[in-house]
Length: 151
Image (cartoon, rainbow, N blue to C red; front, side, top):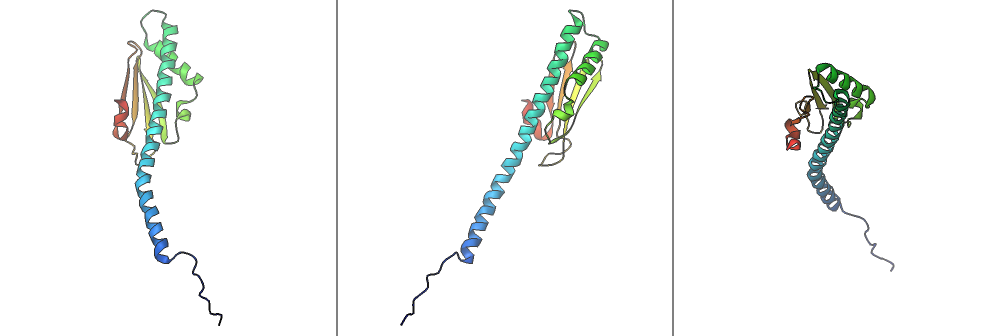
């Protein structure tokens, strides 16, 4: 008699379900950490772009003022010079940011990085750089999800 027991091969349905559940749990743990790191990386890049912009304006002011007090006109000249010479700040930002807007008021320029609304980041999560052309002081203000970046 040639009745041989065939050896079963493969996985049972229960084994496959257990593996899928374990992979789902691991993904649920890893995904929030990954999106948080994406936001931090984007913020770090925004810091780098903002700092480069402020340094370029500062160098221009040092050349233009030549030891005299910085005027509104000097600040306007340097700001427009930097905007033309430097890659458009908005174009230099990471994909997570919608805009990087410079605003000139007298001898102070304020740069605002506004993020795209995704990955847990909302429109109120902004990074602001305020550069005072008279004193050379740079103030960084981080709001919302980026609050820890300015410490």
